[in-house]
Length: 299
Length: 310
Image (cartoon, rainbow over all chains, first blue to last red; front, side, top):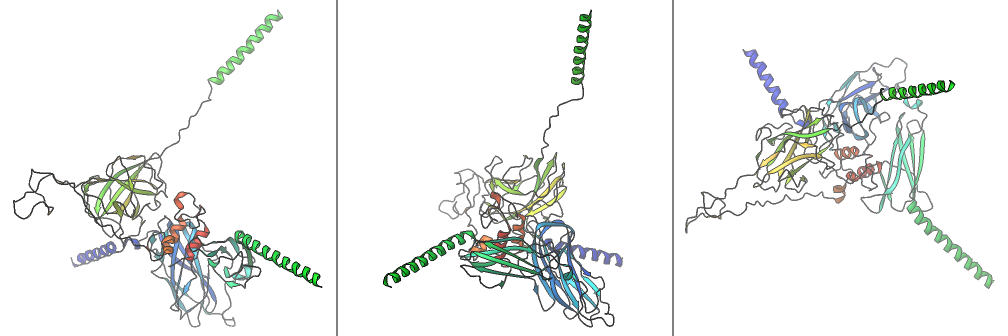
């Protein structure tokens, strides 16, 4: 009898917990999971942990929070080369506690299995034999339904064991030589220099870049408002520029050192400034001619 | 003699041609008139519920397809209504809006932020959440919970012959209780559905045309608003005046322009909404087309990212 009562209590408690759980936290069919590459990482060497999503509903927004053990792992870099995410509003936030937070959106809604979101390039610190990488509860996905409905996916953490480096091997040598395979420059798929429609008096430099091999390492821009170029500065999409800029140049470098460059003009500003420059040149020529004539008359 | 042969041959040829043409006429050729299949979409059943901060309402206010009385201003209700598809399935990705009227013949008004009926917010349920449990007896598939117009793009197809269920959370803003109210779902484009079997209805609270029992020279009277008894002079028309909720503008007009979800933040919800309208054109994307080039493109995405508040 007592056993029945216990079972009944457990079922009732589970039902109560299920019913009181916030509805938005239940998202059947959406999962975030991790996979490491290689499967048996070597202590002291670089390895990759890829963050994947699976969903039976179309998704277009991804808010990701992954945590690793900072006393066991060193984060070398993040990688979006194979990501289904096209738009990254911010750079990833990496906390000393080992949390990595990143959010982005995909132009094409994603439905299906194993959509890669991003990858972490990590290295096991000396003495680390096992570790666990988790997905934090802040992780959320957004349905591509026109309302941005936030859902909480089921999360699967990843545990791994490191094999000791063989004697004589150099610690820190790279096990995943992605960079050496990449000969293609990054792709600049969109580049615009337009008036900011929200704030008058500034322009927005807007661009979309990707590199499916080693990933984007560095983005720089320079601009000119009159004759001379300004210096290169590190930039990210979007960047605000003074409204007087009429030409801008973008320089993208991937992790393998391949470079892509593109130039864009704002022809309306260029036309106006060209007219002013032409008038200035005409004025200078006219003054110079007048001075010469007067010098001849007096000379 | 040769003439007869010639005439006979000619007759045979003519007979042959005629027979051949008759054969062709009596053959397999036929004219096929194609009539395009039309999907008939009908709003069918409904049920009113008390609001609850959960995806599935539990406390019904009346039976299925039975009206309940108009609640007082400020009251939040839940409406579960289903739509049936005939002939052809109702595909995923369809969006609907909710309208109300005092009569089924209209005029119909689309719920917005300052109409007699407005939407409400249940903090524990996300707008657009997919219905897990249907509550109407004839529903076959759950669609979405909606706190705003239009609905989320329908997550599940409604197969021909089946019914999909939607959930609406609405509040009496300034709607009088002395008149009936009817509700209907329409396509978000503004087109009405093909048919309406039942219009979700809220019945007027009956106002008796009674007189106040006055006590000459005594207290009470008709001014207090409590009427009892029968006979006497008619009451003035029943009228409720309620204060409209104050608008809650965002601190910054910039945020107000770029914030698409109305929560005064520019975050992933807004980016997800913007991406849904990506590469679309037409009048319905005006809200999302920041640079007004009649297309939601990467520049609009960049504008949102520039003003990102997170």
